[in-house]
Amino acid sequence: MSEGDSVINRVQVKAQEVAREDFDKARELFATSAKSGSYLYPFRGIIYFVTHKALWKPFLDRLLPTLGLAVGVTTSMFFFAYLPQLAILVFVNGPLAVFTTVLLILSESSTIVNVISRNFLLQDAILDTFDGTLVSKNATGIVSEGRQLKSGNDPIARLGKILKNPFSKFTPKALVRYVMYLPLNFIPVVGTIIFVVVQGRTRGKSVHGRYFQLKGWSASQQRNWLEQHTGPYTTFGTIATLLEMIPIVSMFFTFTNAVGAALWAADIEAKNSDLNTGTAPNLRDAAKKAE
Image (cartoon, rainbow, N blue to C red):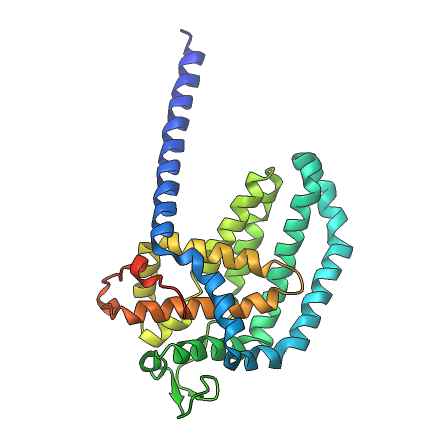
């Protein structure tokens, strides 16, 4: 056997080892996600939101301006950016570029709409929806740590003055990270899937930002918790990202995802787990059907 063949064999063996390691990690994440039931919460959020009219007020108050923004951004992106990006992707994706470019445009439009709406239009409304959902699930103890609560039966009307700062805004770092991973779309099919999952992982890290804030967690506590439950949060974030990529109705899913995240947080609280000491609740048991 020549020295060149020996080098090739070593590279192949190493590649197989890396592939097995990645496969094992992916299998473990998938198993953890399946047990946690986190993948169900975006859909439970839809059902809970639709069947609880008391939660609609923040959504309806922001509906027209945000809908106009989403239509304008998505239409402009398809008009100005579809053909140039299609011309590039067709060289690597072939005929599938027609579809992968659509997915890329939707992702880009979703990001632009989220940056603008979450910072200027929806931040307070999403905050009220999250807190209101917790109140409707009788998790008033945790909500009272971050805002005053009034008496009454309407969960949104009960929300008073905010005592803790709301969700963190979209950061330049998040935008830079998004642009960095855009080239993944040049890899046929698999690259686009990886790109969506990567965005989902980033999205997943933020879905319980308000919950962690209400718990009074430090940055290190939040980081440790998220590292321990990477699979469930990535799964939730990926599904939430895909839902919010749907044109026109992306705003609706932004609110239902907030409801789903709040339902998840309420179920964790219902287990009375000692989160502040780093003891993880049984997420599988926490994944109960939303009432």
